[in-house]
Length: 117
Image (cartoon, one colour):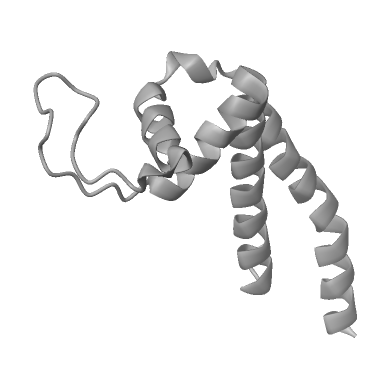
């Protein structure tokens, strides 16, 4: 009997938690994307999209030009550059809101699965 009661509580508690997840995405969309250091990411993403592949050396700074570089963020950079090309700043804001909401959803589902939500 207590098991059924716990399941009902978990399902009714899910709605406010999911609203909070969505609210996190909205909050992320409120902040100006261009106020962050996103230019480097967009430039590297454009390199990938142009067909030149993942950058292996720094081509974007004056002081370290040509220095070997392991670009471990190439996936995000490619998505961000594509969003910027297709939709400009609103595309970047939407991408960030999507990522924040997805992260919140993963955290919610993980805590629920572990019985913590």
